[in-house]
Amino acid sequence: MRWLITTKANVDLKQLTAKLSTFGCELVNDLPPIPMGDDEQVVEVEASQDLSEMLKTDEEILQLHPSSEMTLY
Image 1 (cartoon, helix red, strand yellow):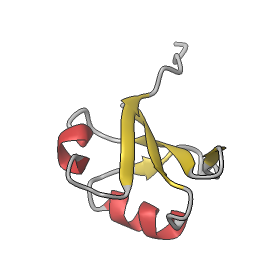
Image 2 (cartoon, rainbow, N blue to C red; image 1 turned 180 degrees about the vertical axis):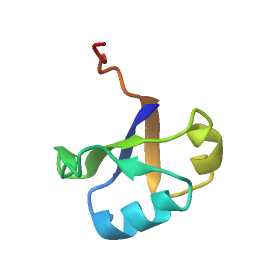
Image 3 (cartoon, helix red, strand yellow; image 1 turned 90 degrees about the vertical axis):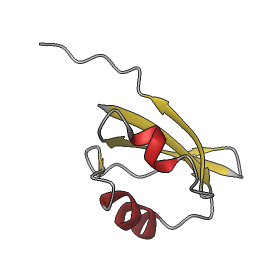
Image 4 (cartoon, rainbow, N blue to C red; image 1 turned 30 degrees about the vertical axis):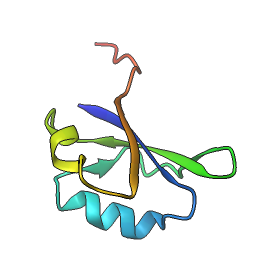
């Protein structure tokens, strides 16, 4: 399942990727974070459906939403 993770803009992508990998997450296509104004950024990851439970206490994660991108078969 793909997720969109919103973090503060000053969160280091390498550190975030290392932390997320402990939960079985991988960045989608190794894309850079998408800036959301001056204070936030969004990354897309591939992870299990229970990711929201695993990250609910992480202070660096501001928001977590399922990605709405459609996959064509």
